[in-house]
Amino acid sequence: MNTTPKILQFDIMGDERGWLCVANGAKQIPFDIKRVYWIYGTEPGVARGKHAHHKLSQVLVCVSGSVDIYCEWGDKSETFTLSNANTGLLLNGLCWHEMRNFSPDAVLLVMASDYYDESDYVRDYNEFKRLNNDKGC
Ligand code: TYD
Image (cartoon, rainbow, N blue to C red; front, side, top):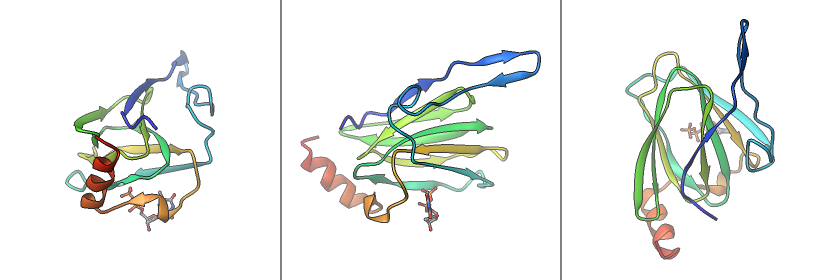
């Protein structure tokens, strides 16, 4: 599994009434979507996430406001700022991610490849590093 995060740009359909973006499973999103959840009302100083997954793939879209997504995978790390409703961030499997600097109006929509399963979470950072190193990274 390629654990490098990837920015996805959604086509914007718009007219005088405003804007519209579409996410079709297996088209704009590289997996069939089984679950959608959204995060909002997070105070600017609060960080969320702080985990990786064994297998799950997710696409994050900040449909309102902005948020920073700090990611670590392999021997790399990068912070992606999501501040446009037409931009997504694809995260696959063993990519440690932390959501930071939520703006007060931030709504972070997440499309996931599978149902919620706590056993797929890697919540311990040292365990993530061990698994990451075992992959030969
Ligand atoms: P948590 O993983 O702590 O959220 P975040 O990654 O944004 O920091 O999830 C918060 C709670 O919600 C936790 O009790 C698990 C539960 N939850 C579900 O029941 N289903 C879901 O799809 C998700 C994402 C979380």
